[in-house]
Amino acid sequence: MSSPPFPTRTFMQNSWVVNDLQQAMRFWTRTAGIGPFFHVQGVTIEEQLYRGMPTQVEAEFALAQAGDIQIELVCQLNDAPSAYRDTIPKGQEGFHHMALYCDDYDVDLASYTKTGTKVAFSGSVGGKRFCYLDTSATLGCMIELIEASSSQAEFFQRIQREASEWDGNNPIRPAF
Image (cartoon, rainbow, N blue to C red; front, side, top):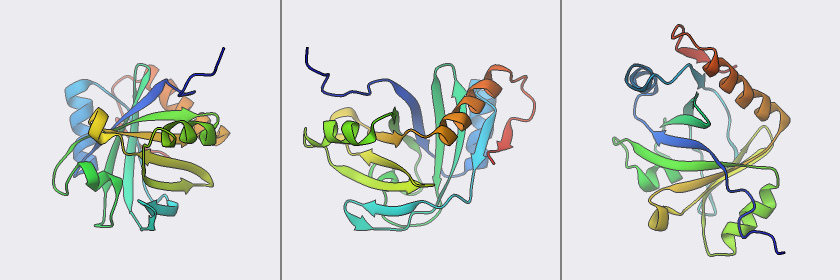
């Protein structure tokens, strides 16, 4: 029996690009009952490449859990070329990507690139890689690959745990 063409197929995150992260977190909490949100700011994205060329995207993020799916809100803070702006023009908001958490990042990346899918953006945080694959023409959104790590897995587990125990208070919390 051969291996499947895409080893990791369980999407764990849906992400939206927003203009005002604080406002978006409040809207999601009030409108959809999603929370608490963990505000991620001041994180340096290393080794950034936008379509193979160096770039310097600055962004902040918010993460919450909705059942089995993580909700991510992304706010780009500068005008650097990015995968976010490829599908969501500055000043607009919308759905951007679905994410896969990859135990074998290289195998998953190769599965997509061998089909002709291009990497729109790549980088690392704390030495752990991620990339956005440009599947927007076929899926209407991008796919993000996230390299698994124990520290990130612990953070994601904390988001899930606190969402399951959330009583509606303290809907916006610092991530770190």
